[in-house]
Amino acid sequence: MTDPMRKTCFGILADSVSEVVGNRSLVYIAVKQAALTGDISKERWADTLFSQVSVTSRRRIRSAALEKAVAEQEVRKQGEMSVKQDGEAVVADLQKLFGGARPVF
Image (cartoon, rainbow, N blue to C red; front, side, top):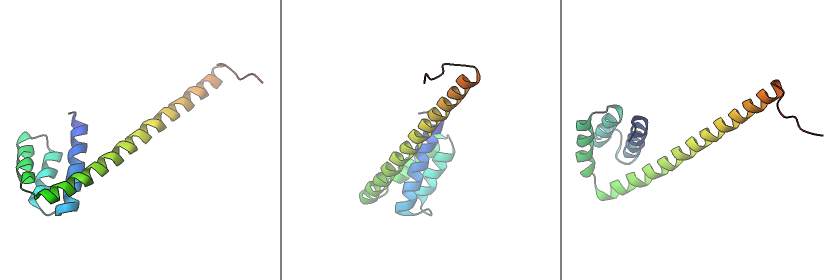
């Protein structure tokens, strides 16, 4: 997994853990530490603490994380679309400037 993707995933997980078990729990702190560092030992620590969370809470965390991931995906898609649209506008402007194809009336 690429580093920006990894940070995004751990960030989503940390936010979801915070919503369900609170931001003062050791699980949240461990997941947040894993998100901020690239240290594999922090990831193991987070995994160990996360496995101690009740099944019900893990299901709620999963649901919250999936919702956040879908929302993040939509935001990224919208960002990509606006970049493409902006790029097309620039190309159209350059065609006018340099005498590209003109519409026939």
